Image 1 (cartoon, one colour):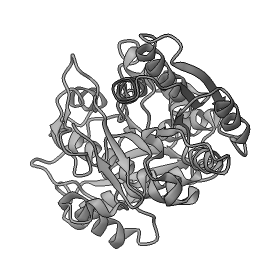
Image 2: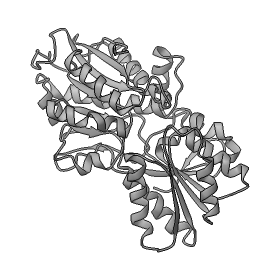
Image 3: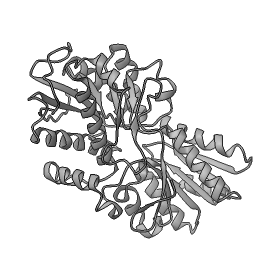
Length: 389
């Protein structure tokens, strides 16, 4: 299978000229690889790679780093784990990328983890918060996710339910993969303090056309809170189905489905009013952030280089992953080796422009997690409003 790719060439701006020190690199460029869902059921997440291209194009326009070129090589994995592994191998062995950046999905990115760690190729800032990334980081030190742990997000949501709806009966709809199961693990751990509160769990596969039967089962369980940790399409379907059933639970959705355009608008903004979610990034399409400096700069960047691209959650993920990848390269100075790239991920102290207020990226050898907290927000029918910190 040939690699479907797009390339962007640029130089990155920092002091010092990077000599050729990595076997996978030529003197002329720094090659970065990523796999993305450019096709298949999660094709909307292809925006992650599109946004990374736009970011690097802007850096190139700004003069780059001492004339060094960076080529971002994108391979379509169709959001299918075996294709992710296949394409990752091609990127490393044929395209000679120095490291992998911003791969999308938990099951997909995990499919490449063993190979990349055996090859000692950094796998950085994946769009995933599956707990195994940090749980097993000593075994797989070359892999570092971007998102907070989904288990931590599940705990945050469950703690809010306990505090605000102590008499509620909770039903959970989750995607049957490492991400969804990790989220449910956090919910269970917190609600275990109140036996009988968690009344139903319903899983769904990403390939299923609808979640109608699962929502009906949650309603039948007597739940008056519905927690959804699913891809945007399934989240939208769940919100709409609950409305059609005239069932009015308090709805919580996962951070992966906070996009107004992808998840809420298809359900009907009026039907989504009152939904609560965990979040850690700003929604570029939310009017609430229209005057935010970070959102304005990134919106201008996208309109300049990718004017047809939607400003949705995957766009934010791609821009943030690219900004952090750029930061790591800058910090490497003259030592642009895979070993030093990994070392620099343990020395980050920065605030990418699209993080929610109050959040910061600060890592160390003892705290590898890039983002460790989520905030809660509620949809008011027009935009998301941050709740108390």
